[in-house]
Length: 136
Image 1 (cartoon, rainbow, N blue to C red):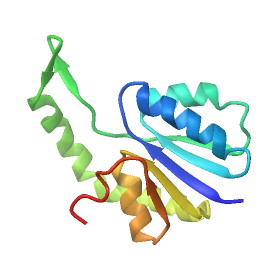
Image 2 (image 1 turned 60 degrees about the horizontal axis):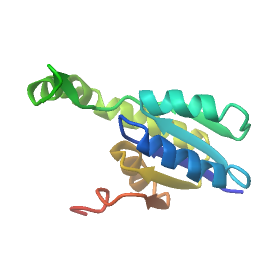
Image 3 (image 1 turned 180 degrees about the vertical axis):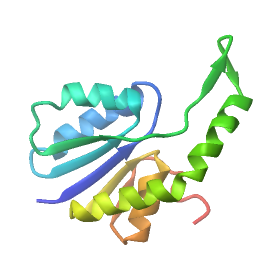
């Protein structure tokens, strides 16, 4: 039985839906710790209540900001500053949780923090998207 840490990004339901499908296949044979942004957290918390070997943690992340139903470019930049200032603390917290949970593998769906932690502590990483391998 593997101990898989799974993280996802996204503001809509697409990443959460894919995560539900993947976790439903994994949870029968493995324990899964999930890091999910707010909307996905709500969806997964409701759909995974009967899965005793699935833990779900809320993950703060940067998201799109809108003004008058149009994408705002200045608001996300302004909100990114505090997020970036707390980035090292967030990474240390995730690293400690992953290590304390005795994770054996990482599955990542377009979320950059856990990919950095996995590389830092040398856990095998499966990325369901490609951005983690760009520039490496």
